[in-house]
Each structure stands twice: as structure tokens, then as C-alpha cells.
View: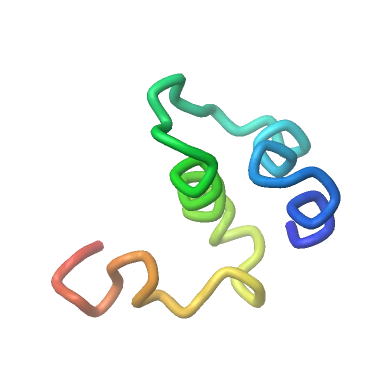
Length: 60
């Protein structure tokens, strides 16, 4: 997860892991957040804590 992000920016993890993505992503930050959210189960050691994604805050 970290390698593709550092090497190719926010679009790289989407491409590397074949993630579905919305054409309506507002900017690179939105795309990155969406990709990280989809990859959390696969890379829990890198993509946390859960509060960043709404866990424990009345969210998911």
C-alpha cells in the first residue's frame, strides 16, 4: 500500500489493486481516502486508527 502511494501518488493504489473508483472524486485527497478505506482490511497495520474512518465515533 505505501510503496505504490509513494511511487505514483493517490491513483497508484487504485490502479495496482484494481479498486473501483468514482469519476466524481473531487480531488486527489478524496481518491486517496476512498482507496485507503477499501484497502483497510488488507493492510490494517498501515491504515489506521479506525477513528480516521469513523469507527468509534458513531460511524461504521
